[in-house]
Length: 268
Figure (spheres, rainbow, N blue to C red):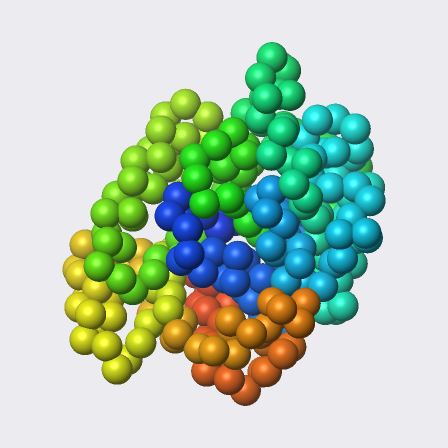
């Protein structure tokens, strides 16, 4: 992508916890950066797991998404480099959990993140191809801000019994955001996570999701992999912790598939 183009803003979201959402944001961002696409991850989850998983210590989080949303800092001031070339981060701390109350009477409260991204790009300082927003696992003002700011949604979906039920709730949320805040919001793709080829249930869930959602589901599936689980405790994406493990290789394939989908999009 040319640096002169606006970055493509993708929100990684699922209202259900434990589906590999933060893991997907971290490793997809790392894979995109590795293939030459400068990428910014915006951690908008008060738990700050994306920040921790990228090795940004809490003592190093001087300015965060909280400061950006409440207007105490510009987005560019809160961006920090990670140890991954071409991958940057706007970190998060637990302070963000109070932002919802603080913004309740603020003008354009649903668009605070969008306005910050637009201002950042307007000053000609954005050289990112992609912005990935890692959301909390719930429908809050933070998630709404992320979806209002995004071009498209990447949906991690765990291969488990209630997967389709959780997906239907998320699709309703996306429809509400389209109707009220962001009519151009689309689904970039659904990525099946924690796939266990030894488990017949995983195969059945994958088949059911593909039957209901069709081409919206990525071909690449992320396997259940212990190396992916270990990596965050070392402050590293799985791709850096163990590039050759099946999970890392899957995220590299997913990045390639995502880029291919982006290239096939109609020109704006």
